[in-house]
Length: 162
Image 1 (cartoon, rainbow, N blue to C red):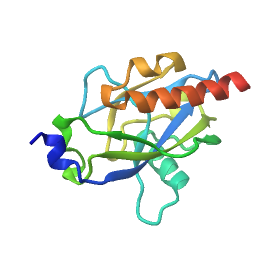
Image 2 (image 1 turned 90 degrees about the vertical axis):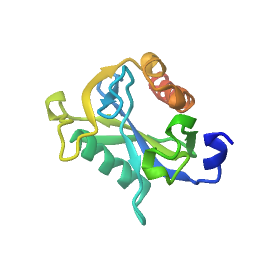
Image 3 (image 1 turned 120 degrees about the horizontal axis):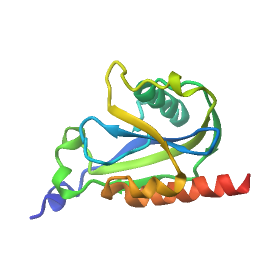
Image 4 (image 1 turned 90 degrees about the horizontal axis):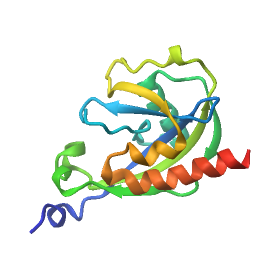
């Protein structure tokens, strides 16, 4: 029996993700402390019981980056899901989930870069940067690639419509 078969009946974790665009329509990405390879991701996290999805996204954004000064651009329709690869099943999220089902939002960062602080109470990132939307799928960990392709298309649709 493969690890995936062993964990196939686990539920997906309910989560949120947030695309932060600066004034030049560059995307905020950061490197995780627990995966210091050359992979970058956008802020994301879980939803607390009874918590509104957008409120959860803003909470996660502030907890991970100290960013508060944003304006909502768009809620991405529906949910975007991914499964963990076999080697992470039973390890991530204390083994309670096989992946995530996420609600994503696109926001505009209205502040200045010095407001961004990833050295938070419980740091998740050790480095951050702004990247071109076309590079988003070049920097993500392989098992989130399909998620980031969908999000990249949503960002491009917004950018080219404005």
